[in-house]
Structure formats: structure tokens, C-alpha cells
Image 1 (cartoon, rainbow, N blue to C red):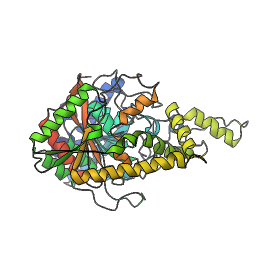
Image 2: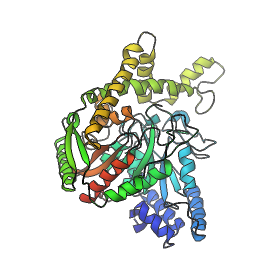
Image 3: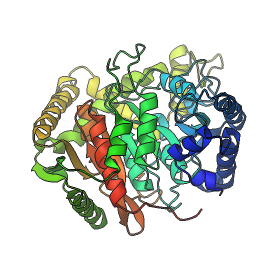
Image 4: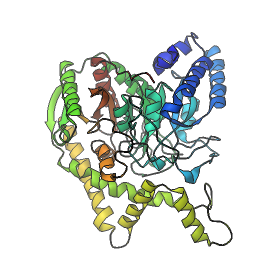
Length: 491
């Protein structure tokens, strides 16, 4: 592994701008790293070597003219395969979209290209972002670089693993119930879910439209903030996009890195105070609180009694929305088409295509969501879940009157062995126990490394009010400055 692959995105950006290294050299180093370790990690579904080198050469031309597109011009990035990318296979981890090459870019991709980032490939994921371990990818699981017998989290395990394995300094993920933060926690990386509507969903293959949020994956808080600044901001093509500028997340991260949290009030969520977490996770959580207090933060306890209903509410709302969103995959317009042998009706072709194209977890959630939306059950299930969502938002609002940010463990446990929970969906769903409330509320949250438990990474989650993304970056950077950096074993 070359030194270039070990550098942070911000450091690479500085060296590229100073012409100490070329973008082609940086891209080649990361592409070679991918080639060397992909057989052990499987973080990527598609590696675009030719496209990456072409983009790197264009970056070198801009930098040579002194016309850098931004602080990340020429820096490599992986993109979760749920983001439509013009001319590049985009599958959402599903057989039903195998081989599909979109004719347009998502807004996220457009902004990455405009900022000069070099996409090295599309990262693996649970099918249609439904899962907590990346074991539900139709193209095989991703492996955790810390221990390749364990999961890298999900649904965005490919993005987190690529960053942890030094295959890319940055990656894009999407967070519907914790799919950026939970993989970050179990791979020892940084993952941020921006405020819902703070990053565009245009061109994001929808799972749950009222929850899906694209966001950054990185190895440092500053890098995550730099990427957040690139992809965030209003998009008129997304009706849920917030017409406000991105808060100064980069400035907040750099302020936090000074290690001063004087005057910052940290709210310890009583309901998520490590109860139900593995002993090592709870211990790391307590040690993180102590570290933040030493930096000047004030700790207050807050109660969010309705958080305990977040998991069941989520697993009614998200499947209901996925039931609606995935109806478009019918074998007629694009993607897989099975059973079209002249002997089956259109309805039969749709049924055969969906049976062949959707995996078990996607089918499970479609069935659950369709049932919850059906006549006679809508008010009892989906309607009640939306009322719970309102109560959770009120809990957040009350808590933020007493605290600037809320903190909790990111996940109740460290990375579990591959195959250990696929037969028990409920145990799999518990991976998102601490992350789901922020999605139902719509506020920003970030996971930052908080130490080890039995040699595996633990994450601390920092939650902030809507459009106060800068607050979480400040606290996350402060904790990062106070704790030793985590380095995965060599692959």
C-alpha cells in the first residue's frame, strides 16, 4: 500500500493543489489498492478504472492552470450503487437492475463532478438499501476490513469498507434508518447523515422517500465535512430539498479539532444510555463522555420516552413507502424481464420478473408494507406509526431546549459474524435501534470512532437539531482530537 492511499482527503487535496502529486498518481494508487484487496473486501460492485483516470487527467489540467474546482479536486471517491450515475452500471444491489446504465446523473453525482472528485467505482450495498449488514446484496456480501469474517454494517457496508480498507479516502452513502452511521461505527470510520432535505434525493433510487438521506463517509471528521459541503444545498429538482444554504460544517469541524467545547451542552439520552448494549460498547460510550467533559462540555440528562417506539414505527413507515416505490420495477420499462416467452400475460410477466429479481429481504418488506397500507389496516398500522413519528419529533424538540446536541452509542454491538443474524430479521433490525430516531425526526446525526471493544470498533453518535449540522461536526471533531486514531489490521 502506498502512502497516498493512507492520506486523508483534505491532505490529498492540499498536495494536489500544491502540485506535489498528480491526480493521476493518486487515482492510480487507489485503483491499484482496490485491485490488491478487493478479493478480501468486496466493497465495490463496479470499478471504473478508465473513467477514473480520465477524470483524474481533467483534474490535473485544471490544477495546472490554477483553476481548481474546489478543495477536493482530484480526490478519489466511491459512490453507493443506489446513486444513478450516467453511463455506469447502477444496480441498487439488486438483480432486477443488473446491467442497467442510467442515461442521467443524480444531483449528488453532478455536484461531485463539478467539484472535481474522481469516482473510482460503485460500492456494494444491501439490495435497495434494505438491510443492516450488506449480506442482502444480490451480488454477495462485503467483508469488514477489521475482521473479514464479520459484517461491515449496512445497508452501505461497501462505502464504509472501501474507506476503512484505504480503497478510497471518501465515499457517498445513504441513510434511511442508520445506513451511513451504523457501517461507520462497525468499521471505525466517520459517517454523517445530514438534515433530511439538506442533500438532494434527485437520482437516488428510492427506498423510503420521507427518510432517505445521502451523506458522506470518510476517515476523518474534517473530510466528512468537506464532502458534506460539496453535496449539500438546495436542489430545485427535489421537492423535499430545503431552500437554505449548508451550515458552515467545515468551519465547525476545524473549530472542534482545537479541542475546546466550552459552553456546549451534551444531552445524554436516558433511554439510550448504553442499556441493552454490549459491555464493551457501553464502556466506550462512558469513556467518550468523560473525554468530552474534559474538553469543557457540560453534560445534562434528557428523556425521550417515545424513542422506544422508534423501531416498530420505522418498520411500518419504511416498508410502506418501499411497497409504493418498488412498484415501478415491473419488467416492462427497464431492468430485468423474465417469463416473456409468449405464453404469459403481462401480469404474469410482472410477477415472474419480481420473483426472480427481488431478494428475500426486499420481498419481506414489500409484503409487510403492502399489508400495512391495505384497506382496513392503514389507520391501525401506517397511520399510528406516523403519530408515533410526531411524538418522537416532539421528544427531540424538548431535548434540544436543554441540550445543544444529543449523544448515544451508534449501535448496541460491534460487528457480528457473517451469517449469524440472517435467519432472525428482528435481531438484524436491532442494529439500527439507536440510529432510527434521527431519521424519523429528520435531524442530522454523525457517528465518530469511540474506541474498541474486544478489538473491534465502537461508534459514538452525535445528534443535532434540523439544519444545525455544524453542531454535530464540532463535537465529533473534538472527540476525534481527544481519542487515538483507529487503524484496521493489515489486509
